[in-house]
Image (cartoon, rainbow, N blue to C red; front, side, top):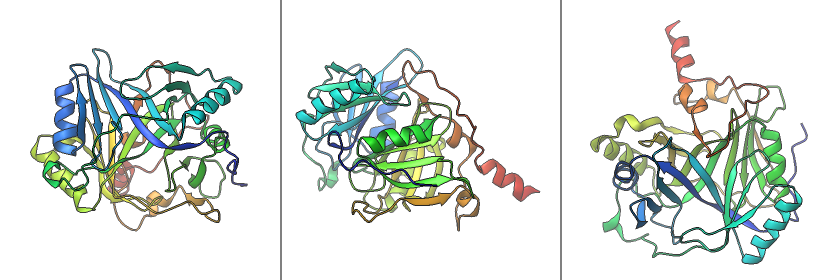
Length: 334
């Protein structure tokens, strides 16, 4: 397969994954999970919304939780551009691509653009945001795993090649990708702008749907600390996958489901990927079956995800058939 190439002359300067906006049934229960158990910091709180960030982050929020009386969804995933001029260029770019973009007012953010990408993922793009003091060395305020910063999102998508081509044209780089053994179909693509393996990941599946938001932790022992504290606070069964080690990215990780079944990953960061000679790395899908240690994820990790508000998921042309924990256990039993 000829691996798709990035556009070296990006139409505007997208800088990084910024924030996710989720709706939840019970803000109190969500606060207990995200602040007390996981360790995110509350920047602001109203009766209808909770604005959270990591201990390293100066940006006002990287996760927004909004109260809802309906089924919880992901409203949008947020991306940052460098300047207001880049925001104007982004608006023109999307309009030219016949992806209608509109200006909206969002609390604690500068001018903000709402648009959906080529596969229907709702995006929220801004250049500026209110700031708060970083808490990097204010250890007395740490809770849970004390996550450092938001790193990336993963989206289930019915057309991974289309998503890959769209983001490459915006100047994203492809760092790693997964294909069937002996085949060239793109099943997973890891796309980045900030110089590590990914800001946004697209995986083959019914969608677009929001799979997870990922936050870094400074040290690997904090992954186990998160499990211990979550268990002590009554969230032990919210642990979904891990602790373990990824193939792509190589990071140690753990995944939790929050009280509304949204998914969050904690992981201990990964390698630098910014030099021009860094070519995308291919992984065969069989890696999960043949990994050196650790268990594959359960089936729910592959197939369950949060719906986007107002977006009806579409099935991919070829439905995924991943190697799951259930298959692993069945093989062992036989």
